[in-house]
Length: 165
Image (tube, rainbow, N blue to C red; front, side, top):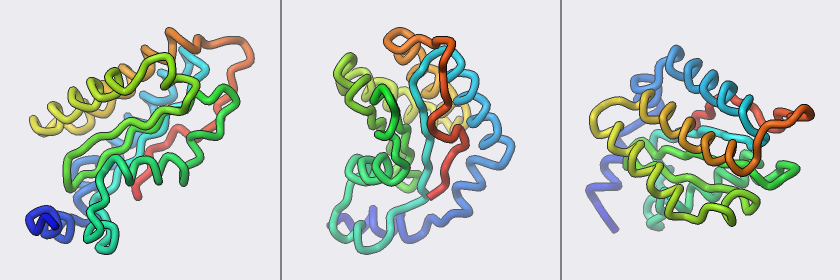
């Protein structure tokens, strides 16, 4: 049990999300998802969570484990071509995780997603939260464009709006 991590999570609430992602930033993130999805047939979701609840925190839940739960909860897996991608930020840990459905993950592998996550985390360390998320969205979008280019029948299967958990 990491006491320092527990105290950090207990001291960070939803107000912290609003501080680093004011409504204008959330609108800009939604627009980045929308514009990126115009170039491919994949689906991108962005979710941010201030901190973990006490029980999962005491059980040692990691950001990766939580991101897989969120991927399921938001039904990112429920796309026609299995090409949904979740970008998940656990603000208390400043940890970014990308969970990609099997249709795109099999083509790229975890190393690609980890590189995008580390680049985003560097932006966060510099206090550039919105810029980091938008850059991450564009990086994911580039890979989706390469493997799942847009076509005339593109359907937006998942909402583009960011999710605050």
